[in-house]
Amino acid sequence: MKSMLVILAAAFTLSAQAQREASVRIYPEQGKQVIDKNIYGQFAEHLGSCIYGGLWVGPESDIPNVQGYRTDVLEALKKLQVPVLRWPGGCFADEYHWMDGIGPKENRPRMVNNNWGGTVEDNSFGTHEFLNLCELIGCEPYVSLNVGSGTVEEMAKWVEYMTAEDGPMAKLRQENGREKPWKVKYIGVGNESWGCGGSMRPEYYADLYRRYATYCRNYNGNQLFKVASGASDYDYNWTKTLMQQVGNRMHGLSLHYYTVLGWDGSKGSATDFTDEDYYWALGKCLEIEPVMRKHIQIMDEYDPKKQIALLVDEWGTWWDEEPGTIQGHLYQQNTLRDAFVAALTLNVFHKYTDRVRMTNIAQIANVLQAMVLTDGDKMLLTPTYHVFEMYKVHQNATYLPLDVICDKMEVRDNREIPMLSVSASRDEAGKIHISLANVDLKQSETVCIDVSNLRLKTINGRILTAPEIQSHNTFEHPDVVKPIPFDDFQLKEGKLQVRMPAKSIIVLEINAQ
Ligand code: AHR
Image 1 (cartoon, helix red, strand yellow):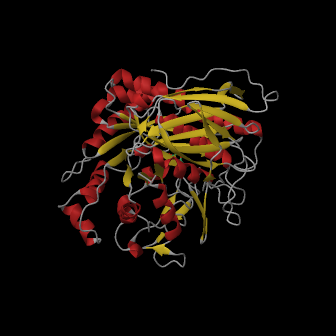
Image 2 (tube, rainbow, N blue to C red):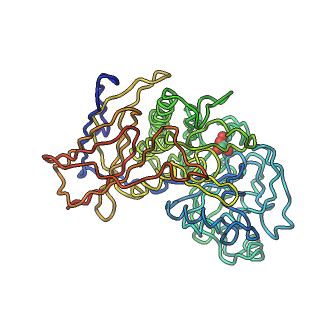
Image 3 (cartoon, helix red, strand yellow):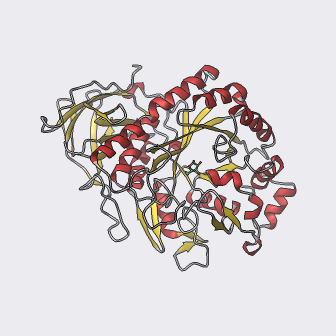
């Protein structure tokens, strides 16, 4: 069974039908690929209030905290089972000098965050604060190193500082209060080196990568996984050049893809949008699949054994900044539309786990498509958070191929979107999880899942929906969009009939023998 998703075009008859129908067939016996848990990775940049105010308030703060980390955010992130966290940027990474962020706080120099609003950064959150946070929430760190404005020596010493047991950098770390090295596997050698990371041509960056990466050493058994700065969206030449000229000197190559309405001018409001805007966003978000495929095809030419991973280490929605917020801080609200972008994108990633082994949504708090928003001592969970929480059951589970037959719709910019998105996996305990998204704003959908090859014991479900696609959580009303139990399904002649309301995301858990 090669094709995992077959979408048959049915006429788009929005007005005529009372409700839609779709069918799904899952092939549990064909499951081979494991959905790397790192597909559910996060990204935290020194940008706006992602770090300061979002994750970190400092130990002296009145806001409840554990060693300076917000207690409410820590708890929320633990529940999410964040597998990996990328830091300190983004664009910030290529202007970051790590030595400014170690040692006594009062001695740390200040700097201007040139990329993000010219805010003055006091470096109170540095290497120790980041790596200790990862230990607290139980995730792997992914450290983005400075190629754009840093030296090879500076980069080499940072790796030594974090991971060596002995030597001058280990001694400095110990003087700063950390005896044992941290475990740091993932390092990014530059970020967006074609843009904010140095405006380089791919040939020049390829040479720089080779030079910088040479001096990132494996100390005391710590094995680095080195990621080269990859392409943006449709820049296939960048991927080709890197594959040709860097090849297996890198363990991974990145890709950035945002659901964004162009880079100039208005990107559109996060909360005030039309139905057409919503469908456009889903079309743009789903275009990540053909884009990824093309990058993967190029990688396959040079690396048919798929040894080099593709890491989509920035993705998500990018809307206008909320009115009244600081320009350059990229603070945006998060509606049910964002939840759909998350659900559909994750369903796509699951299909490519033989090549795509990590992705990092941008960003974890208060920036772009965030998991949490904070305001002083208040915190809310976004609709996107709830998708990540509902979908966490897919982490490290075996991807199950499936066919989908459903209607599809033509949307702006000559794109076509299926009205149903589905993914399935089997976890280590044998439970099957099916995530389904009915993207239709008006019509419910009866989804017929062929389960004749399964002996079902129990089925549970949860649903995420809301009165409007613009619905979102606020500090005053934090639970407008949140998952609730779902049981509108029945078993009939070997078929599980699931009645999905319009604009709903459902995760089913099936216990089978
Ligand atoms: O996530 C915000 C920014 O988007 C990152 O700093 C940069 O890498 C990308 O352009």
